[in-house]
Length: 190
Ligand SMILES: Cc1cc2nc3c(=O)[nH]c(=O)nc-3n(C[C@H](O)[C@H](O)[C@H](O)COP(=O)(O)O)c2cc1C
Image 1 (cartoon, rainbow, N blue to C red):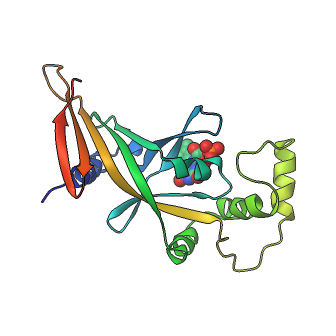
Image 2: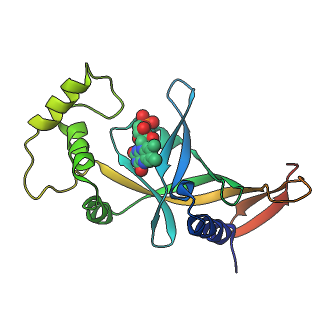
């Protein structure tokens, strides 16, 4: 049976084939401790059959995600928007560590910087201070992933697809909700 997630995956594959740079990323929205919304771009990864996000545990979004989040994608090449609500499942640390090895040198060192110097998204006096702190890190060779490099599998509970391709200009908007193990579809006023 084709699920809305299969539809998302095949749409995303079409966007990728069309050379759409947005196919690689998503916007993740969360709610901060003070109740304000925060959104940022993240690479939307694939781990076997699941969508996945990778981040450092010191980042505010890691804590915020415990209270849920929302993912938005828009692929201009095929004029499709998705909005997604989801639950998360932590990715096995050995899988995170293996994929972490493919990170470029500086992001690898940054992950250790967050652990040994100061957390991601905190203020620092200057870029010089940042560079100095990074250079000062003495890391074992070969460098391995800190336990604080984390990954989350995304388990969608609700997907909304907005298709702007209708020639009439009357957009096609549908919401798919997971009820038990079944997906239910409703048409929404676009
Ligand atoms: C194209 C692009 C891809 C990004 N991918 C990631 C990512 O996969 N993981 C991540 O933690 N931050 C990623 N970032 C950086 C985030 O947008 C953000 O600046 C950072 O994670 C700090 O976010 P926070 O303070 O909301 O936690 C990416 C930024 C851009 C522009």
